[in-house]
Length: 253
Image (cartoon, rainbow, N blue to C red; front, side, top):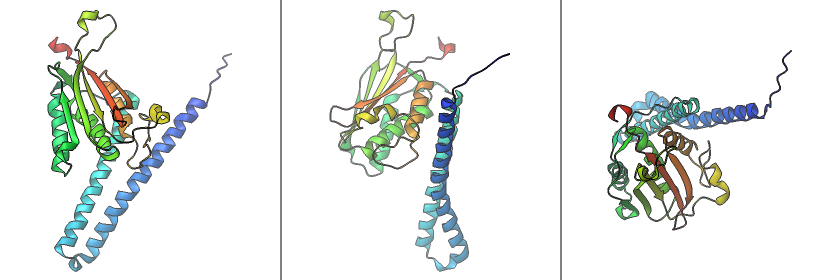
């Protein structure tokens, strides 16, 4: 006779998490799809009544809402892969300074003042082998958060770091990783919320979005064998720092 006893709290937490995810997804999908349906139905029924400018405005709104749905689906796929341990990392040589520069230039082109960004790059940096698309995803999320929710100057520091591993000698662990720190001068993150920043659905004091971005960022960084932390910047704002090991592919060793 085998008697098995299980605590059901873990199952209840999982079920609550799934229910929250479904509710969030349903809410986030409803708004853009309602907009898409409304504008397309209106255009089909009354096409001749609108001017070219009005048609363009409605079609641009439909296009933006379609992009919003696409981003949400991509987030859901990332979460599924992270939770199941199937997030693939396709490593290539990544120039972290150039990657950060592209994101900053995009914000300046979109209307942000150039002096709002301060990028400091330490030289020399070790060669970083990482997935460029996923690193772009991490940078995009962290810089967007600093721009949208922070204030003042957004400072991005790129430095060499040590990444000690079990069995390494002390003299062999210097500059085996690249570290990126993104900080702002806004109100920062309350101390009591620090331990929830990388959980699902955390949105802070300013609501908006799905609250899944930082959860995905953490999953991507950890899939690279790296770490990410959150704290308070010198200027009082939020500070996110992620560190990625060099990660040279085995066939190049």
